[in-house]
Amino acid sequence: MKQLELPEPIRCMCTEHQMILSRLESLRSAANAGAADVAQLAHLATELLSILNAHIYKEENLLFPAVKTALGNREDALDILEAEHSQVTELRDILASLAEEPRPENVSDYRSRIANFASTAAEMMRPHIFKEDHVLYPLAATIVPKEQLTRID
Ligand SMILES: [Fe+2]
Ligand SMILES: [Fe+2]
Image (cartoon, rainbow, N blue to C red):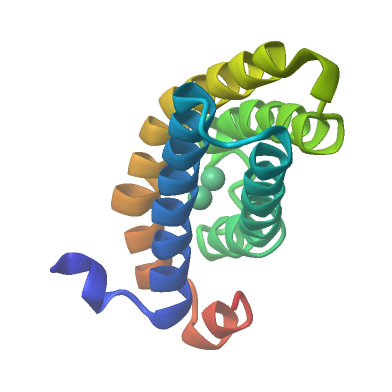
């Protein structure tokens, strides 16, 4: 598989993508099935939030700047992905408020907000992740110096 040829820090970020998508699916199905209580849903949301925060941090503070530098300080090189990141950040903020403010007195409303969030986030993130996995990460593996890539981990 092509993914196996990528350097370790980049492979790790591909794994994080899969974790994000699978946690979103777990969150959606836990909210829809009604089997998980509010505390369990909030816990799943908190776990996903922490994975998402670490991933966004790596991309925005380490990988994106390294790719732009390697492209000769092309500040506009990642405009599309960065615009998508403002949507990702908005979704992250919604997730943070869901994780911190469960309202046990209105459980069905909480469940439906979680389920809606998970569906919307998965729909937005799938194409973003596809671009990163298939375009940005292979490009980064080719043009960013290895010692810089190892700092991303
Ligand atoms: Fe991203
Ligand atoms: Fe990503």
